[in-house]
Each structure stands twice: as C-alpha cells, then as structure tokens.
Amino acid sequence: MQVPSHVEYERATGVEHALSLLSRPETRVVAGGHSLIPMMKLRLAQPELLVDINGLAELAFITLDGDQLRIGALARHADLLDSAVAGHHFPIFHDAERVVADPIVRLWGTVGGSLCQADPSEDLSAAFAATRATAVIRRLDGERTVPVREFHLGPYETVVGRGELLAEVRVPVRPGTGSAYEKVSRRVGDWSVAAAGAVLELAGPAERPLIVSAGIGLTAVGAEHFVAAQAEDFLRGRVADEESFAAAAAIAAEHCHPAADQRGPEDFKRHLVAELTARALRRAADRVTRPAADRVAR
Amino acid sequence: MTVNGTEYAREVEPRLLLIHFIRDELGLTGSHWGCDTSNCGSCVMWLDAKPVKSCTLLAAMADGGTVRTVEGLERDGVLDPVQQGFIECHGLQCGFCTSGMLMTARWLLDHHPDPDEAEIREAISGQLCRCTGYENIVRSIRWAAEHAADRAADRAAGETS
Image (tube, rainbow over all chains, first blue to last red):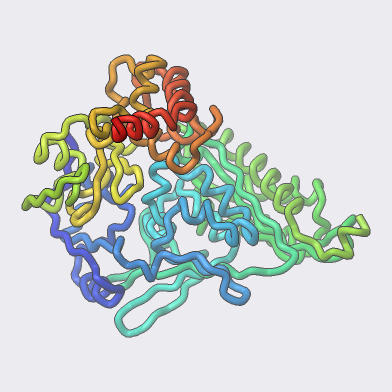
C-alpha cells in the first residue's frame, strides 16, 4: 500500500494566505495533486506542509486581455481544452491538452501545476515555451514576471522560490500566427516518447509567405529550456515551405539531447524530433489566419 | 463531507487518501483500490460532481465536499441505466474496474447523452479493465444512452401508482 509520509495540511483561503503559508520551508502547493501525491507516495517528495490552493477561484481563469491570453495557474487541463478563446488563438494548447494524461486526470490537473512540476516529459512546458509565454509569480511584497523559457532550472526545478506562487501565464497574441503540437506516446495517457510544438508568425504573399518568427518547443528530449533555439533562428526570415521546415527539423533533432530509456533509444527519439517538428511546423503554417484579401487572392 | 447524500464527520490524518477514507472509514467498499498510481481508474468516484481518481487525492482535500460513489448510483431501489446496461450487455467479468467505469459512464452521459463509440472509448481511456472486456463495456454504456429515459419513466409510474 502506497501512502504519503506524515504531512501537515492547510487550506489556503486567499492568495495572501497561501503566500504566507508558503514562506515556511519544506512546503509544497497542492492543486490537482496528480503529480505531487504519487511522488509523495514514493517518497520522491516529502514536504512537511501542503498548502491546498483549490479554493482560490481567482486563479482559475482563461481570458483574452488586450493582446494577451491570460491563463490562471489553477485553470484545469480540461478548462484549457474546452476554452474556445484559447483554441482560437493557440490551437497548440488544444493539441497538447488532448494528449495530456487522460480525461479524468485532466479534470483535476492544473496548468500551473504542470509547469511547476517541471517534469521533462510534461507537455505544456514545451507548448508555453513555443508561444514565448511569461509566467507571473506572486509573493507577499508584489509579483515578478519570468519568461517561461527561463522558468525551468532543470528537471523538477523551477525559479519559483520560498514564499512564492505561480499565479498565471500570459501568452502574447500576435496576428498572422498559427500553432500546433505533435506527440508520440506508447499508449493513451502516457508521457511523450517525444513531442514538438511550433508557433509560426508569417507575413507576405500567401503563395510565398515569409517567417517573421518561429517558436519551437520540444518535450522529453533534453532540449535546453524545452526550446529548439537553433532551429528557430534558422527559420527567421525564410520562406515558409517544406524545404525550410525539413531543414529546421533536422537542426532541432541535432541539437537536442534525448536519453535512451524504456521509451526508446536515442536515435529513435532524434528521428521523432525531426519528424514531429516538421509536422508541427507544417500544421502551424496551415493554421495561420490570413487577412481576408489574402484569402481571396488564394 | 457528504457522501451519497449522507453527511459524515471524521477526524483523519492529512495523509489519508480519499479512497481509503471511503473504504476503510465509511465502509463503502464498492469503490476499488487498484493500481495506486492514478493509472487504472478503479477508484474513480465523483467529488463535487466531477469524476476523480480517489487514490490520488487526500481525504482532507475533499473536506466539506460532496462525494458520490457507486453506492450512490441506484435510487429508490432502481438501478441507474449504466448499471442496468452493464447487466444487459455483460459489461463486467471480474468486476474490479466496474465501479470506476460506472461512475465515468454516468458522468459522460450526464454531459453527452448520446455519445458514439469513439467518444465512449475516449471517456474511459484513463481506466483499465483487467479482463480486457472493453467491447462489452462500450456496448453497456451505449445501452445506457439508449435507455436513458427508462428509469425516469419507471419512477414516474411508481409515483403515480
């Protein structure tokens, strides 16, 4: 029988209350709990105090605010998957959420929890990295913002410190953008063997669109900060076509650091990175919403 | 905590899991404790109207909440259509996954009264049938979708007689 070790439990009544509780050492936030509690059962995590933030409704939102999509840390995976506004601007989130765990787990697991768990095989970290999102971290004396690309310090480690709480993630919305996420896993609900997310901002004529900027996130393959930076640099300014995508995909596969494990050997994972990156770029380009005049011209 | 309409108050350790609270403290053993890793879904019950793998939740997290277990499906001696469906279509063999499957099926039908086979398979994709009897589980849930009105009609008849 797997049971967590002795732990104290407090239910936060507000963000301030949560933050004051989180100033204690060896304290962990629990929301969905679907990563933390299994880790506590295995003694991979042994916090002395759990701060339950499930009652903090003010952190459970998904809203478009000017040119930002704001996602509260307590938004559940199912909320993001069901969000029309998120899916409209960032289909990458719907692609990714469809393959996060299973439908029951998605009802409880949270967006903030996924990012803070910092599991190298977790899907949303790469999706948010691809979108160049910003994490908003609250503390008692205010808040600070950190690019998601600097949020993770390593496996299971983030920049969120003692007395701090990830409150929301802000995703910049830009016109002329398309996005997609492609994952290969062994079975439904499993972690990625490998996955790739892409965000493309295109401009210029529809028959020969140019890449203004590219965001590529990689999951489970040892990419630094979940990003394929060299492939992004390569794509900037190029024509958005198969040739560019194939070359960028090869660069992404070359520069990641997958580890051989029960999900496959290194060369297989590199092969997946190349294939999935190309597919994600292709789909992202297909999804770019173009101005009406462009569409008529096509 | 309110479980199947009855209020319970117990002093428990924070580390007690919801599944053990329901089974060991309240004696409601219809919910099964399976893989202990939130993979198999045998322990699925509802908390505040949403299915949850109760081996992955602390009982304390459900404090003040409303829980519904498989024991709460039957009403006034009449089985829920999902329970009847599992009987009609032989949806269980060993029965270990059944209570979790029933709770997920009820939730699915409450939200999508007429799911197709693919939607049913997606809904139960986080649950394992150790007998691999998925075909009949899917048929059972379809049966329940097609006979959703039966129970309501039975109850209406019962009330007028």
